[in-house]
Length: 637
Image (cartoon, rainbow, N blue to C red; front, side, top):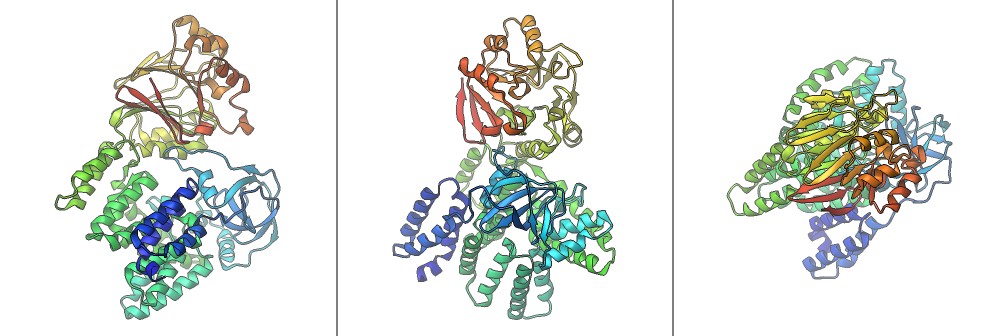
């Protein structure tokens, strides 16, 4: 046990790694962590480490379909709630205002949570599975069996009873993290929300002027305990409470961080995937392990921003510790408004406008790209240079601004469910073209995919036809990314940078699908054909006009529906790869079995965004590399 105490920081790192990777390779990560510990300690303490890691890796929730119809509401969001009964959880989609910690009766058909996200878009089903939620249910009218008696439930009722809907939306966002349809903030608060732990930061700042350090620490620990009970022990408050207890007990800083992080991970292993764990942990490890903790924290914080939010804001990283108490002030003002009736939300407006200035420093882009290899090599070459961390931060920002993290041209088929959205970009974002925008509900996926590549503007936006699942985000895309040209009808040849798009379909009929744009592109030696929702009649017309038409990559028409992809068309174009952009089969029955059979008969390999996730074809030299967010890898020659 003494060795565990001496190497607490190492133990916390291994525990976090085990929790982070347990869904992918639990046995491998367990063996690797034990080998690292054994090599470091050379004693029998690995037995205790094995026990700790086993507690992290053992599943805590039932994976079977819930057989119950009555459960307790443990979390509430805008259009869904998490309902729990024993060690089983369920996502319940509803427009009703469910109250935290109330018991409800639900009805409906439970469905397995499926789906593979994109490279940069948020994979909601995967996040649910990490929390032990494997099934969902749509329930229009959940029935309350027992009203909530918890303090947080009563507080939520009081907010929902407010007549002013705008005021109610602001308080729900600040106190409970529940978003509304309307925009409540202009600054980064709209994206990150306000943590309940921010009040403790504000309290620490204020008490520091009046109390001795020991007295302040004791009072903060008591406040953290009370807050944790009130909010049912969310991760940040639980971590704050554990660290406070250890500090009051006189545990040295490094060991306190190690023990505190290990204990909080044991209590909630799924938290290691969240920003509420990763960003504070990065700052804590930097302060313990680095000679220059501020510089190291700044660089590591920007990297975390880049990976988690696909956006870097250096000003936020510099001011983060000072901004946290300000967020606590926001929360206190919300409490005052709720219980006093004073309209103090007007005070939040000027604060929010001041904080919104920080968004001017936003640099969109994720470091998780092919250029990361080059950055690591350059960083290794700077290892012995003076002011290494400052140079690495400058180099990181240079990569972020210039798009060097994504140096290759690509064609990407976004995973937008039932709909189409395809990005074609030249290297370093020199020319960005988007074909279709998906349906409105896919806006987050599309915007995250564009932001992840550091795209600020679009050169051309094609709308193949005016169906909702193709043009559902046209207005918001135009407002956000300011495309130089928006092409909604037949246009012949369109040139964008070094990219040439030829619309092969000339039909203009009442049938919007038949009149879809059919775009042809030659990029890096591959011929692409994007069919929109064109049907067999449009295909026949195209074949008559272009009798020698062929392609390497064919985006099947109408999500693989049997209305297109005729035998004559497939026989002529003979693609090396077919792409299907489709949603849940149980809802839309796409792709159609007949279409799949046609592909199989012709030995045409195909990928479906529903199962493969986002599909990328990277142009690396003369090679065209296929990657999917579901883990498929290949090369098209």
